[in-house]
Amino acid sequence: MMPRKTVGVVGRGYVGGAVAGGLAPISDVVVHDIAEPGSATIERVAGCDVVFVCVPTPAMPCGGADVSAVRSVIGALEHLASGAVVVIKSTVPPGTTEQLAVAYPRLAICCSPEFLRERSAAADFAAPARVIVGVPRGSAPQRHAPACELLRERFAGVPQLVMEATSAEMLKYASNAFFAVKVSFANELCELAQRLGIDWEPIRAALALDPRVGADHLQVPGPDGAPGYGGRCLPKDVSALLQLAEAAGGQLPVVASAAAANRKRRG
Image 1 (cartoon, rainbow, N blue to C red):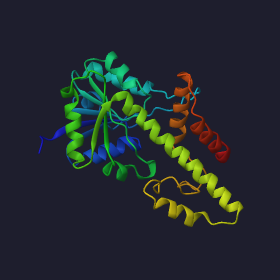
Image 2 (image 1 turned 30 degrees about the vertical axis):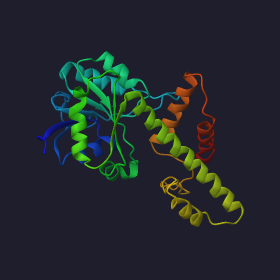
Image 3 (image 1 turned 180 degrees about the vertical axis):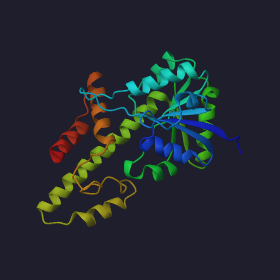
Image 4 (image 1 turned 120 degrees about the vertical axis):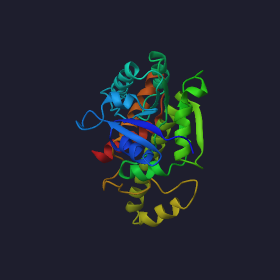
């Protein structure tokens, strides 16, 4: 077994809390959160072997993701932690990790997006389908090795996929956009079934048994008791993806339709 590492976590939301709790069995974890006066200082976190950045990236008025909190944390770490391995867990647009790696070269910056459900974050973190590590182009593998080793130890037997950071960032948006489309699809079919006097539940249960479909995001209404999708992630990430497509001169009509249908259902 590897020597026990020290792990810093910045932000104790549902992602940061899951990361801190999930890594505690194999590492010494310290958490810094500006909303918690009693939490560790950023200076103490900066001294850890690996630092996970788990701060919010809320939607801006234009629909894009506001990454200012991530940049602020990385900037603080740059002045405090020479050579630290910093793992961005926050959902950020493709290209963000690359840009930060250039702007703050003293830090070994990579990203490892999470695929958690807010209502079951701790359980989802503990049992991932795969572990993703995104590294900047041309970055030496040894710079990010401590993070990869830590995650490999914690999730022994789980596939670890190392890819370019932009691909890892895009994967997170692709995943949430797919779930948004799936929720909208399920709501449409449920509404049609109700019009025809058909019970949606046995249809949902049978669909879920097909491994090509899966059980998640077919429940109508959703876990919060309302139709469509809500929560913190899907609305803002779908919005950010649509803004990214528009900025790139493209369109995502399927995703845009799902978002429009959800706005109508949610009111």
